[in-house]
Length: 224
Image 1 (cartoon, rainbow, N blue to C red):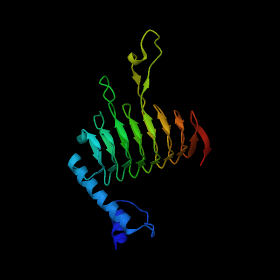
Image 2 (image 1 turned 120 degrees about the vertical axis):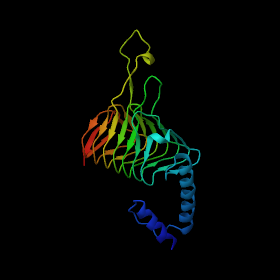
Image 3 (image 1 turned 30 degrees about the vertical axis):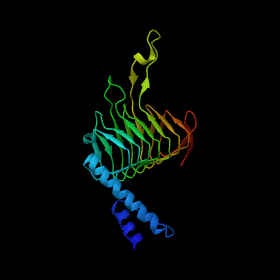
Image 4 (image 1 turned 60 degrees about the vertical axis):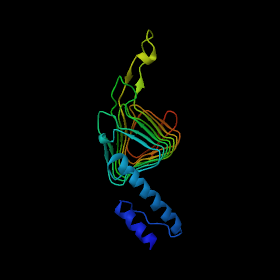
């Protein structure tokens, strides 16, 4: 009975997978209780039906558009101060201990983050979103992934690097992309649809659809 109820709740929230029959009822009950507390916490913090973990901070939530069944796990910091509205699509999940920094310095108001439906990022993800980050639908990512959507200028030898300003091209990740753990995305990179990014890659170029990329710097290893 518990599994049937939980399965219906999953389908209602947009999840299409079937529960493994070996999953014990106690695990399902524990998950439902946890999710219930997260939902109450999320409504208190944002005024929306969002699942929010313990000790998570959400700043300027009025500038964040939450889709259905969004989960922001525990110990996250979400900075909603951005020039564009931050969009978290349906069934988006942000793993524990992750951070979104939209505005990193008072000299420049940051652009922010957009994540499409059914996309999830693992624990300890860092979104440096001052230059803008766009992630498509159905994207899955491992832990310790980082995005850096700005570059420091350094060509003027007479000035300190920290005083020369930054360039911001932004980062774009397409739809249906699998990103391995500890990948670093640098400003100006674009990953095409239906692609795979190998663990540990440093991504700094523009890559076509159906690419498997990896390495430092990342290059196309194979076409799917």
